[in-house]
Length: 69
Image 1: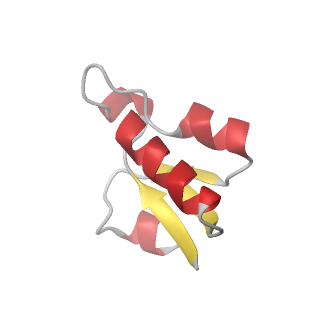
Image 2: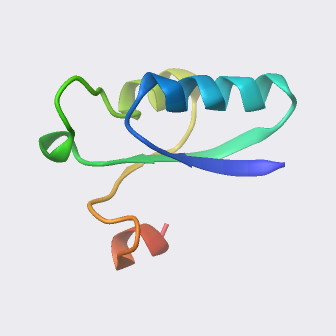
């Protein structure tokens, strides 16, 4: 299965790792821009870079910038 992840937490990172360990492929990671992240969250940028997953920042998951990915 191919999948993408949208999130801002270590929980999202652990989900990705679990799916990858089960043999699935993460095609992309998306998160809010750093300026919009809630306090105490890191986004997925560093995780995606370390994991070799394409990373995108989007302001609205229902907006045109996300659907263009």
